[in-house]
Image 1 (tube, rainbow, N blue to C red):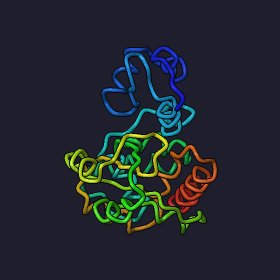
Image 2: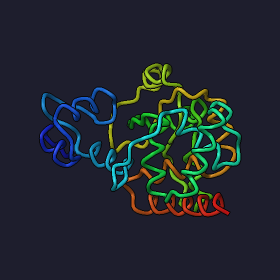
Image 3: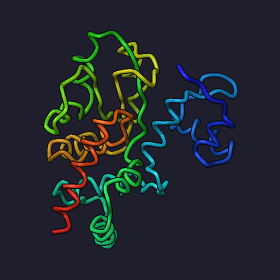
Image 4: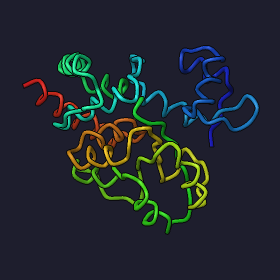
Length: 220
């Protein structure tokens, strides 16, 4: 496991050490010991922000973007805001969408027993299988959304251990999971956003390509 100091992380991210501490407290970076951070969590954060470090939308707006791109109504977003969001999406490239929409959830990664995957999939809104429809090979990984208030219980129930390189990704969100499940079923947008945050080049490319195609169709 590669480690970086808080100061090095601040330099890498282009922020202050105080902002790094805030990101740790928010769960965006993984703190390991006094003054030391998991370097992979820094790389993942950079991947989710995009190269231009776009300011993220709020959770409801992020989910509104997913809904609109998936052909759904996004009724939790006001009419005027929905109109502005449509205009933004029509002028947006895939990488910016990834950076803007990261407010939809806080992602944490874990390792655990190999038999955990099947049981875990039944308790999350899993997007990892959608990667196969985007040309990726099936794996035993789980990438799924959970209610923010249920994250700790799920981690404890399955004996998961925090690990930035682990095969289990849990994305804690305040959006009702029935809405998340509907959007996951509506098309590849949600899975593509998840893939586009990956450190794996092929996964990231597959996600960005799918989002580019979706945005192109949205503009038509």
